Image 1 (cartoon, rainbow, N blue to C red):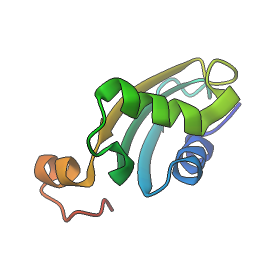
Image 2 (image 1 turned 135 degrees about the vertical axis):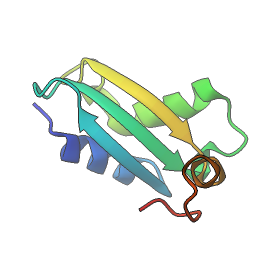
Image 3 (image 1 turned 180 degrees about the horizontal axis):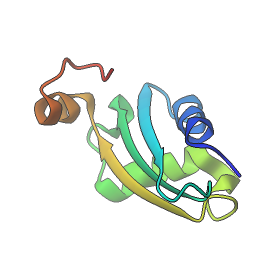
Image 4 (image 1 turned 90 degrees about the vertical axis):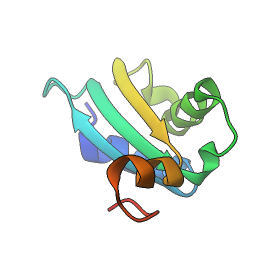
Length: 89
């Protein structure tokens, strides 16, 4: 089963210019919650943004990852929501 760190690395490696914050929701390694910040989301619909993340996870989605609660944001949305600089910490 993947860990939250593994899922984070898969997203950040598979989706250019991204930062992922991932939590294992159940402790079982198959239900995760992720916030993904990426400039690749600029101008894309929410569905298209989620598809980019699913693409980064590849066959792990629907395989060892059974559920993913996903929130996607551009760097500007992250900064506006969290009062941070453009780059998530």
